[in-house]
Amino acid sequence: MNTIFGPIHSRRFGVSLGVDLSSSGKQCNFDCLYCELTPMKAISHQQTVTPIHEIIHDLSEALLNHPAIDVITLTANGEPTMYPYIDELVEAINSIKGSVQSLILSNSASLSDEHVFTTLLKLDQVKLSLDAATPEIFKKIDRPAEGIEIGTIINACQRFSHAYQGKLFIEILFVRGVNDTLEEVVALNHALMDIQCERIDIGTIDRPPAYPVQGLEFQDLYTLSQQFDPSLPIHIVSRTHATATPSRYTSDEILTTLDKRPLTINDIDALFDDESKKEFHNLLNEGKITQIERSNIIFYLPFENSERKRSKRALKS
Image 1 (spheres, helix red, strand yellow):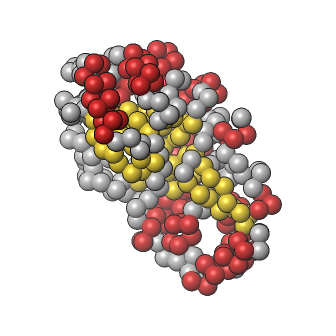
Image 2: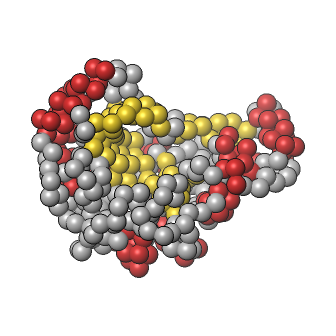
Image 3: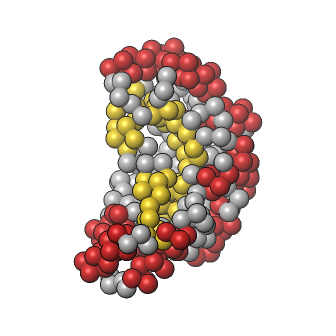
């Protein structure tokens, strides 16, 4: 049963059972600098295809053995939307999954294909990557197959976000000295303003990368998060919280900070010193700070601005 892996507990998506649509090895239309898989030239089509009946057989057995699953996650040693029978597979999964949610982790490159676009509309949750918004940086960080253009990807992501009725997540992975400039963040911000999504996860390298590149510290990610429009539902995904240097915040500074960018309790533990944490809890107890949930993640923000700070997906619905 090499097409199924897990269950894996994900803080962002719950208990996940993974479905590998390229179990034979890496097959991807990107060759990203930060990929944890062996470097390999980007390709446009899968060369080794796992039969649908094999995947469904393995998945059915796994669901019987692991009934307490939140999501079935379509992924791959590469890009899952390159699987040539993706629509038939999604239909088959939907017929056996019951109340379990379906999720795909995609690099967005195939979304301009109307067949893929329509198929992804049938899933409960979709995570799309968007590491860059300018052609030069896109080609540098994601190293796409020939013919894939970032402008086309952004347009497809924007169209998809307005058509999709499930939970849409956007993920940006920052690499030091590549896509972490103010100019690139401005371009990303411009693209994201017309994407309606549940959450925008920004993170960095936390596994050994394919190429000699480096990730950012938590403090760098936090600084970058401040450059995005406050209306965007930004969430910092980082395993390096401990590298941040806690600072002293007054009550007004805490409220102002949370107004500009809602934070999780892990963010607060990393950024606030002990006195600031006490003041944060005082404000929380006084009702001046409240919390909102964005798909398994709790964020804290000023109570008076909680309506204004709802995710774009919430505003849409």
